[in-house]
Each structure stands twice: as C-alpha cells, then as structure tokens.
Length: 282
View 1 (cartoon, rainbow, N blue to C red):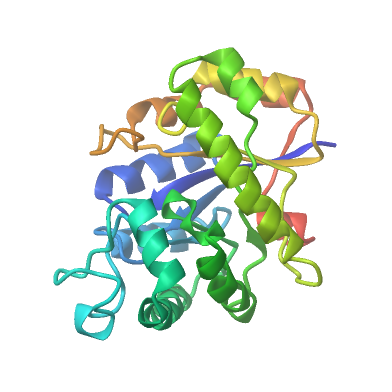
View 2 (cartoon, helix red, strand yellow; view 1 turned 60 degrees about the vertical axis):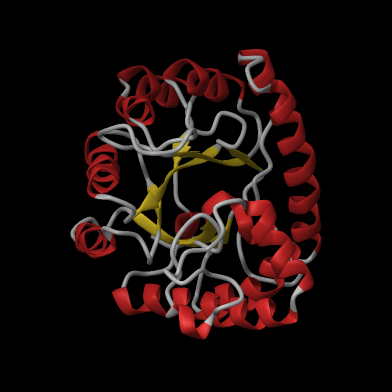
C-alpha cells in the first residue's frame, strides 16, 4: 500500500493561512502541517491545533526569509536590528557556512525554536524548514541532534521529481533544473548522515518544483503516477493571496478541498498518513 502525507507549510504565518489549513484538514484531505513558531499568528495556530488532535504538527524552522525567536542583540551576526533573517537563502547560507560567530548564534536560535515548539505542548510530528534551509550542511548538522532531542518522528528531504514537473509545465524549467540539482545533492548528503538515526524519511517529497502552484490537475497527475511506498506532498494554502511569488495562495487550498483529489486517492487505494503513523503511532 502506498502511503501519502499531505502537508501544509507556514502554519502560524497569518490568520488567512491558519484558516486555510484548518479548513483543508476538516473539510479536505490535509493530514499534516508545519508550524512557524515565530509567525505573526502562531498563538492562534497553536490553539487551532490543540482543538484538532488528528492533525499532525511539525516544526517549520525559519533561518532565512523570516523572523528569529531570539532577540537580535543575542544573534547580531545572523539577523538585522528588527530580528529578521536575510530574505535571500543564498546570502544566509553563505553566512552560516563561513562565519563561526554566525554558526554559534544559529545553534542558539535553532534550540530556541525547538523550545518554543515544545512549550506549545503539541507532539512534534516532524521537522522541515522555510526555503528548505534545514538541508544546508551547517544547519542540518546543528538541527539533527535537536530533532532527536525534542522527539521528532520525521524529517523532510526535498527529493522532488523534475521530469514530472517539466512534463506538466515547462515554465521556470531552468530554475527547476537548478533546484533539482542543488536540493538533490543536499538531500543525498543529508540522507547519508541519517544512518543510525531514528527519524523517518519518505521516499519522495513533491512540492518544490511547483511551489506556489500545486493545482488540482498537477496533483492528480502525481497521484496517478505515484509508485514509491511513501511520499509527502506539501502545499502553501491560504484563504487569500499572500505576499511572495511562491505562495501561500487560495489555489493550493482549492486543491486540498477538491473532490477529484479525494476521489483519486480512494480509487488508487492510496492511504493518507502522517509521520507518527508511519512510525507505528496513532
């Protein structure tokens, strides 16, 4: 039986994102979400999650393109005076790679985000990150022991399928090729370092190549062609269009609410799941 996690990123980012995620879980096919503990609407998101015990909640680590948990005075080498990380992941990644001061501050910030999640009282389903920064070699080295310490069950490695995406749409083909190469190499390196660790990793993760554009027809194509034993498909749903070229957006929400998607899951015999369920937990 093929098992599929349907996850929504950016839980806690805004009221409209929170509303969309809860609607997609209660009325649609969403099984899992990833919480931004420094998001503008994180308190609302935590309250919503506490009232929906069937929704698996993981930590969406933010170390680029968002706010930090720690005060900027404590981490001046990695955030600006307002406590914001660099918006460009390349700039943040170079800083983490070459500055020992930045690495020490990054370690403290990562622990602070895990601690904030633990303070919610929610079970930690999994760990992923904004812009997939957790597969950066330095970030991954610091994050892995924290994921185990705080009881995460799963970890996302963004191993998407370039050819399925390009077969669906040739838009941004060059960028997709770059993403496939960079994140494929980084994911392979992370996987090699997971030997002996208890974290669950699924065979395929879909969402990178069509990020912000996970429309119904594309997801139906994925479900029809899915052959691996386990997969995650992630979305960026919102009840209204948010800032940013890659979402969140209402079209991702529409896909998660689509009767055709629900029907395709049933007809193919695909089992909806979560990382804890894959580990044999309810």
